[in-house]
Amino acid sequence: MDEPEDSGRGAAFREGGLAAKFAGVSLIGFATDAVLLHFGIAAGIGPAWSRVISLICAMQVTFLINGLGVFRSLDRRRWPRQWARYMLSNGFGNFCNYWIFVTLVSTHWRFIANPMVALCAGAFTAWMINYCAARLFVFGKARTALATVLRRPAKPPA
Image 1 (cartoon, rainbow, N blue to C red):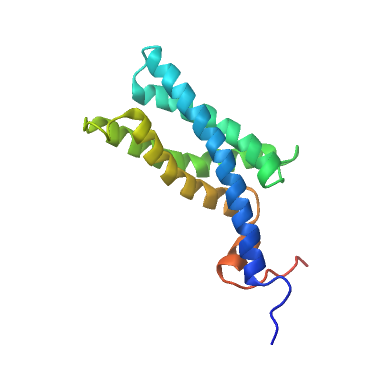
Image 2 (tube, one colour; image 1 turned 90 degrees about the vertical axis):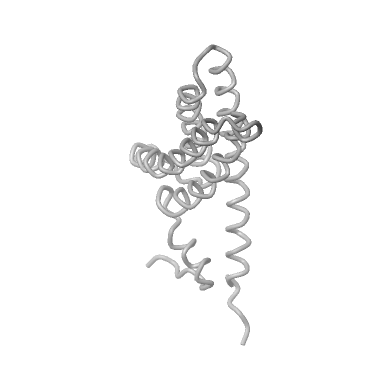
């Protein structure tokens, strides 16, 4: 028996493409975060408070790019609700990011306490959490994503 045209492989390929685009946007957010963190520390603000500022700014940048370019579902009617969902769900991922960052910096271990190393460790964890949250809950792609995970083609909306 032949597989349907929209088989699990095709959906998984599309999902991988979406994850790759999200990763690209995450790199832009990471760069925004890192640059602002560096400037904050250079300005004499402690690493923890500099990170709060840099993270909030990076979240705004990634919300716009993900909503307009990656998921292509940001519109004038729904953007306040999408923004609130994004800030809440990605806020959780970024809380984990921040917690990892502060924990590693506070160890004062030679390599791990470096703010940029701690930033990388926290950012990777947040990326995984934030992609799932944006994909499933913020930008309304849960049905297709769940079908991919379950390896069944999504049924078109009635």
